[in-house]
Length: 159
Image (cartoon, rainbow, N blue to C red; front, side, top):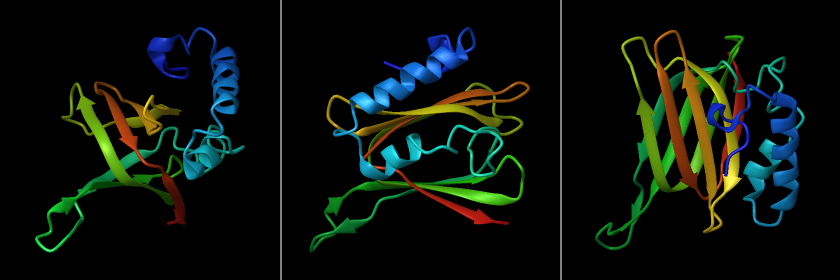
């Protein structure tokens, strides 16, 4: 179930897609990871006039780490940090997923980079995990990321 992505008819009825997404967020408030819910329901997250908005940002770096614990470092988990250059090029957006359960990064043509961060949405999986689905797009490149994680932390740093 998705709401704001191209395949879901966003371009035919963008206001309706956002209304349905807001209704969905309200319906799952108790199941949503807290930081991600605060982000998805903020006034600025989907407002391209706000410099913190992810729309049209450029990927600087994704970093996957595998912290370990235990006497033999046998207890492992995955974390993901993503750094974006904001759309106005006046600051950085840092996204942190403390614990990854699943991820898939895809791009059709990467010769000229990943392109712009176009649209994304945050949902809750049947297991109660955060699902962050992201569309990237440029002149010749198209990509989709799907990240399933425990939560999502956001930080804006002026450049």
